[in-house]
Length: 406
Image (cartoon, rainbow, N blue to C red; front, top):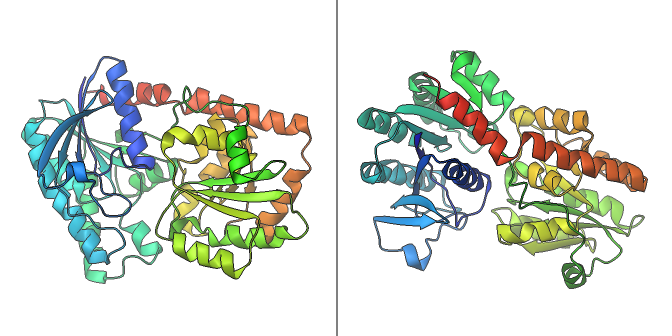
């Protein structure tokens, strides 16, 4: 099978889209298929292109064996919506050159968001005589509207027209969640033309391990119950609620400590809130390379995953859930819907009400009372779930079944 993966984000950037494309590409290569990635120069999350990539329109490289075509992008980080839009469109157009440099292909898998990249995917598939698979990880523009990011009614209408057009013209839709799959059916896409391409985890890399004594000592967390948030510090995650939870627990539960590992647009706001609440039971460690995350999970008793309380997130499956489970770290999920159902059904985590510090604190208090056997059962269940259903081999096997169909 010959596959082109078209995406705006790819390593050395970190994040769910980057990891998914990289891991799927590696697994396809491992199974003997041709894969090429067409992506932008690295720029996320700070809007800065590294020195080695600057001043170029196009560059070809191999990233750990994966052939990668990189084309120019106007980088934008915390700028206005219109600057981010300019960034999206700059790569939408420049990526055509990457497609021209790539080999003939059978299938073009195109990531959304950004939605506009679907224009390149659709037209590129026409030019190369390939099938166009639209990989939807987030429903846009609906998500931007619900989060209050997008308010211009004319632009929203135009984006919805483009959205409908691209869904209709795609050969198949690869949906990241069941919720997205249901949305596509409501938009008129036949169910047989939709399949799941969920977030997954490298279960050979993220494995249970004894606590890293050096990291425990560095962070002065010996003897603590460590609850770790690892990922983007963004608005959608509602992390202010976790800090308020820490404030509730600080006095009477001094052994509980919250560890934030990551970076993002809300970091300064969260640091200010930490100071305002005078929290001594919260540590912001900053971003770490993906290679160090198993070390972080080794000192974590629980992983906490949080989302804001909006209907949009009922169908979410945050990627950060699966590395935690794969290391045998039970998950505290502050949300409802699809992910909550998975964790409850498999007994590998606990569910807390989103954006409800009192409710989250009560769940954490209950977890303190788990017996060693109960905790061990949750850890074991999480590892088994990751291996059986969310390993990249399992996910790529399913992907191939769907894209090899006529």
